[in-house]
Image (cartoon, rainbow, N blue to C red; front, top):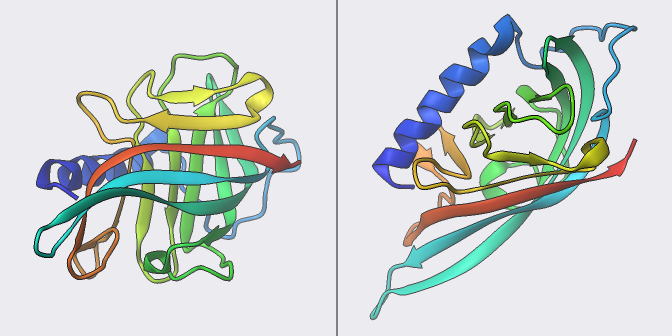
Length: 192
């Protein structure tokens, strides 16, 4: 991850933690009257470009799969705050290949669709790795009924980022391989 992307990820962390004055998943009971079209399970891919050391160095593209379950936490004004209660990531960097309960996780999504509001998804895995989508206004795409969530890199921001603030490592956490561009992500609702 480039230094500017690491800075952008740190900014996203700060923004997500203060969004709407609400906190991410903490194991608190869900409000019985909180309803959202987003509740359910989403599965999808996070795509990226990389550079690998060698003689000569090589470049390529790759992806990892992510599954998350979200439950309504609160709906305020034009945003819905959902708690990420389960995650499974195929890449070993996240330490959650068999599935896990995130130590923190939230999805801040538009309450009404379509919407031009910003928003996105963040998951902190038990190993300390934070995965966040970019959340500039207009960067998040949501299809009718919240069935597909997606985002892509813009000129001024990353599509997504992943880092472990405890160890200072950046995705993909492999010696000799560096992510050069977090290009896009897409999550499709697979179950209510």
